[in-house]
Image 1 (cartoon, rainbow, N blue to C red):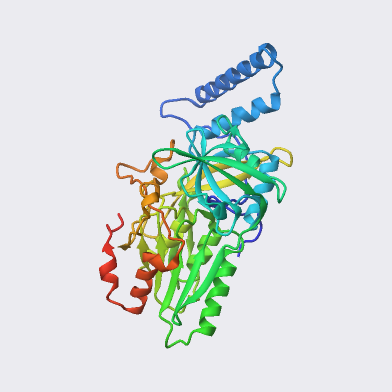
Image 2: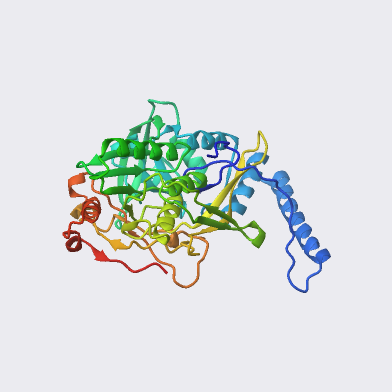
Length: 442
């Protein structure tokens, strides 16, 4: 298992750092000489230098030059795609803490959309989830100050602070943009990324909230627990719950997939150049001993979650049940820029399932679609619009797909997706009355 934090590649909201060398690469357009390409590059750099110098010397007030440079870097990266960004030294340190599964804050996975902070999902058992923050809430103010003009990292930094200190979030919710204020108390967020329990006396349930450095060990512990506590002749199989899991570390998604596979490709990543393609294969030794698996996904299942679901679906190792996933099919690499300069979070590749599918802006369609019953007050507010709705997302042909239902009932007795998964594993024909076939994957 990869443990060195400088050899981790990330997929989704959780982050890790990857060693890289920063260099200059010139790509030539056919018919263009190398001299002309270099000349154009230097001309543009000179233009940047001229503008910077004019601002530095002629702006009405003396600007902070380091902030000017940081703003320019942020502008470059935000023009690429929604997932590339610059982290200053503090944000980089915070990110490294987060990948270890413990950090200070509120417990919200967020992205940025149209100048405001959008909640991807609240993390289970944190101040955010307990206060009632919901996926797709738009955070427009923190402690009464608008988030307009802030980068995502700056907004996140404002939400973090000393443990036990209060912070007020103003959010807009639903199509009507109803304004709500929430006062939360910051806490030490220890992310227990894997939870498990035995359903009845014959099914092992594993819930993965995100993919951090603890995830595979948590899954392995759960499998060992079920194997020792459920008699082999009664053990019907596993439910792997990846709903509203925003993703995380690539190596952890590979190892979790490998826990349920005996052989074959798990995922490939493909960068700009053919020689950058990497393929990751399962090692012999299916820890689950071939027991049936139902994987639960929904509109909040993104990136590393989609790698696991896609691998098990393509190998016909599991039945995928729920609603279409988020559709984040890109890989981000963290490139350190020196001790004092933070790091780049740069999109460096797309990933593909074993059959060669790119799920970017499309998502994974479940084998069996099961919709939840939505409370009247949440109707129209529960759907994730997915990667395809993010401004500047990487395109993926003409068949991009929007979001899907992302609601999970807090009362497990009302969770139709878990009920359907149990019916399937136990061979209960009632499942056909509560589910409907979904479109097959492209």
